[in-house]
Image (tube, rainbow, N blue to C red; front, side):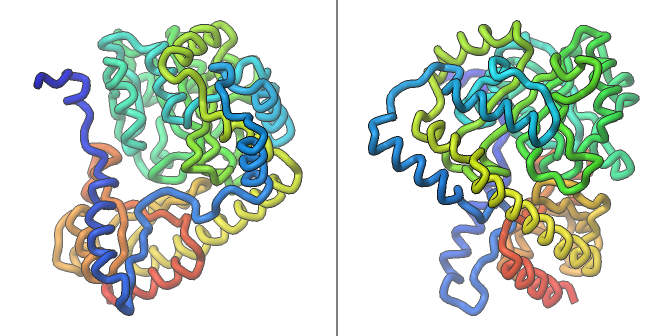
Length: 398
């Protein structure tokens, strides 16, 4: 059977390869004194709060399970619009918001609508691997631009200008980012977008961790950029992370008005519509009781970060930049790997799995610039599990 070249270009998602090995070992040690601790997958340990679950049940019982418009329930688009206004002071018209089958569908729709064969999209190295694969699936080329800790592992306007060529179509950024949990400073993001606009390019910003920002300076949506600049940004968001609805597969896309009918036409053909039950449930995310619970959980995620990162640094797993959002720690494992007698983050991750029964994600997924130096921890687990993980790390690292 002949496989399409675009499919051959998609690399394995190594975090899932590690997860399979961790799951196999977990079954062997499940009843021992050291069951597996999974710090490798970026999934909140919280599930949808009560009002959201109740709304889903009511939708099913009432028979509200048939197709919606491809752009999603108008009521949900309007609630998201109000959330932008009250939480971020951003004026985002509901008609610019398209509900999607997760952020993945949002990225796929945006890339298919805007990227031609051979177009180059600049992205920071490190960055979330699936984002570059969406570019590749649209027959574009993701160009990874190495970043440094001093740049918070984010692209700068200077690096965008230096990397821009005649084939460059735009940039795909993430703020806060996976795997680093770092955000782009608002003034730097504005400089990047102004340059991209001057070249007739597109600025796509993955903001799925936007609600999980912990520092006031960084907790801003790109859609709120002054001078009307936010109206030309394409923002991708999700109900998975801040709203704790990972398996419900619901997200959204904010686009300039002229792009809405294009995205709608593509969504009609590719997806028909997002999950109707998930949409009705998501309406309850914006009830005062639910929002209060989300903020309580955000404070808990911050407390986990504030505990875990200093402990990693103490153990020689240096986190060069304190995350300002999300729930990740991108740690330099060079010294720790030497202590265990292995080279590189891939072997170190498997050694930790065997010796400490802790699953982490090696840097191989996230780019090509020194991935062997870094591993990613997820801090989405309970504080109890994080403290247990620290104790095990200390036992094996000495």
